Each structure stands twice: as C-alpha cells, then as structure tokens.
Length: 338
Ligand code: UDP
Image 1: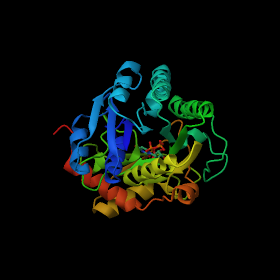
Image 2: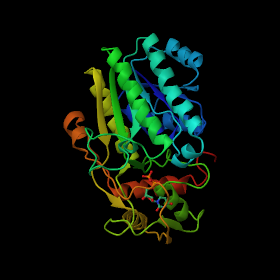
Image 3: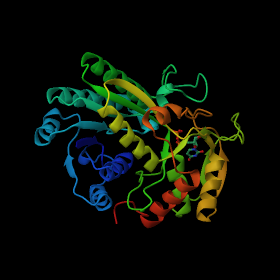
Image 4: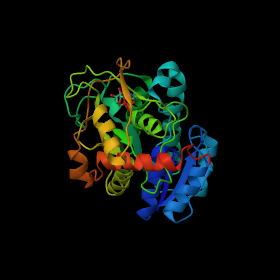
C-alpha cells in the first residue's frame, strides 16, 4: 500500500516514515527541504531497510505534486508539511497562511483529481487555544488560537472537514500533537533546529553538548506544582506509531475523526531538566528568566480516545525521551551536516 508523506524529511515526518516502513507500507516522500536535509532520506532508508521514493516538491506547487500522483498509485496521504515556528508566524503571518493553508488546499484538490480518499493530518494541541478546562478532550471547543501558526492548524482542520463533507467517500483523521520530543533510539534521525532552538528539549540538548551555556527557564511563578510551565511531552516514536494506527483506522471508515496524541501526563520544565539529568548522568545549568510572551501556564491531553478507538497509547517515558534525545545530539552534534 502506497502512502504519500508530505514533509517526510522533517523531524516528525522522518520518524513516521520509519514506522510506516516497519508496518509494511511503501512510502513516497515529498518535501521542499526548506527546513530539512536530504541526508535524512538516506537515514530513513537505512533504518527502514528499503528504498523510499523522495521528491523535492513544494506541496503548494500543483503541477509538481500532480506529477507525483501520476507516477505513483497513492492509497493514502499523511500531511505533515508546513511551517511550524510559533514566533516566526507572529512576524510573518501571511507567509504562514499562504504556505500552510495553500499546501492543504492544493493537496486536497490533487487528491480529489486522482481519486485519493484518505488523509491523516498533522494538527496540534494549539488548536484548543486558551484552556477552557484541563485536560483537553477532542470534543472541546477549539480556538481562538494564540498565534497565526495555531490558526493555520485550526483552519486546515476546517478545510479538511469541509472537503470530507462534500465527498462522502473520504476518510480524514486529524491528529492533535502535544509536545513531540526525543529521537529514534538508533541515534540516526532526530530534531535539528536551525539556529538557537525555541523549544525546550532541543535547547536542553544543546546545553548538554556545550553549544549553549545554560537553559533559561521562562517563568517560575505559574500556578503549577513548581511554578514552571507544564506540557504533555510525547516521544516522537510513539507519535509516529500513532500515525500508523490512525492510517489503519482510516482504511476502515469514512468521515472525519480527531484524536489527541499525547501521554495524558503534564510535566514541568524542571521535571524535564531533572529527567534529562537522571537519564544521562549530566548536569543542566539553568537560570530563571521572565515568562515568555504568549506562553500558556499548563496543558496536557486526555489521551483516552486514541487508546479506545485506535488501540494506541504512549509506551515511552520522559527518561526514554531524554536518553534518546541525548543519544541523537551527541552522535550528531552538527545535525545531518557531518
Ligand atoms: N521553555 C523554557 N525555556 C526554553 C524553551 C521553553 O522554559 O528555552 C518552556 C516554555 O515556557 C514552556 C515549555 O518550556 O513552558 C515548553 O516550551 P516549548 O517551546 O518546547 O513548547 P510549547 O511552548 O510550544 O508548548
């Protein structure tokens, strides 16, 4: 069965590719490499133990995308391609709307033209906006989002939902990710942010490797157990396996369904620092800084629906996430550019 994976060279996409291959699917990757290295494809093939097709294609480019659909008899699509930096989306909202919405529309049009009916979409817990209650459940009201990146995810969910309503043969699964971290246990693929990382785990990893001096903890006066921000961290391999479960589910049903992909557990910034130190026998120097603008104090997933309906739940602990992050970081201090 042929699965088209957009953004398949990215951090999450590459892990999905490996898990799909392991589950016996054939993979066709499209990626414009705007935030990924071509070396990733070799690493995916090495881990998958088989050839994957990869095309340098921007999902917004209808002609180029159609060419891929012409070449391959695609059974389902997993749509991960998109810009994902929250801060940048505030600075360049139009670039985010054009890219993230344009790609979703172009992909859906192309799917319709070629009679492809199944789509799994990379959404985000950010669609819930400011928490109305915790944990987040899938039937909770969504939005308004706190930044344009989040809005592109929420709007893409709506676009896919409307497209599916107009084509009853369609099956769409919207996956709302919590905070994906970690790396493949082989240390061959992982996250490599360009420049100084915005996100907590890659920042800690770069402190550990000596590239950055100390972690700045954004606020210790939140109404949480230790005053630092609380999130639901999920190992990227668990997240990738969630896509395989969602894909199998989409083969058996039609309509739209939505699932949180999280652990169901909230962890604070200091929990993560301590888990990293424990898992790797390292010290992570940190200092307390003021709160970061736009940050929510705390949120985590109700992960029951995914377990009940998809038969999927996380299997990896915070320590596993920290160990695998460090294994990747220390073996690839310069990312894919060896
Ligand atoms: N955080 C921090 N220092 C950093 C980066 C993040 O203290 O250098 C905190 C941030 O305030 C939040 C948590 O870590 O409470 C997770 O932040 P991240 O940017 O990884 O994810 P998001 O805010 O998008 O959930």
